[in-house]
Length: 135
Image 1 (cartoon, rainbow, N blue to C red):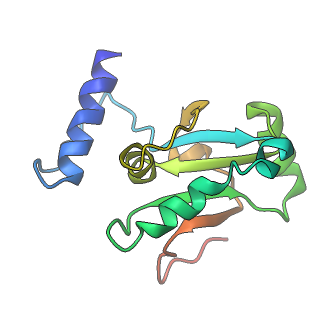
Image 2 (cartoon, helix red, strand yellow):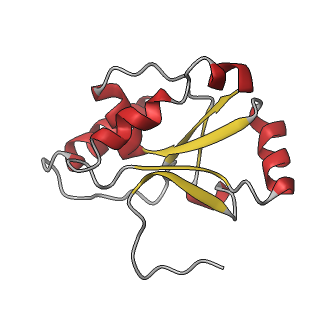
């Protein structure tokens, strides 16, 4: 737990330009945090965080929020079963820091690695990377 806290503080300082990147061979990065919402929560305005984060994209272009592709029904079902809710979102560290700075209270359910992201996903908040083709 302490190691995770130290790693998060170091990544925050690095993002603010205070430290150079340092990797530790025993630590596996967990770059995405998971949130999910039911349709009732969506109807009550739970997706407002997208609008708030989109407003700060110009200052923080590294923000990325993904969801499972709406066209991959098996993948949607798998993530729904794993995390609950009807819609599952994956926020990178920059998006989580943006939520903290904006005082958005989101309940993170888990942390997952880049390898655990859905194969087919939709960029909900963020700027698409140019020249990257995923199959």
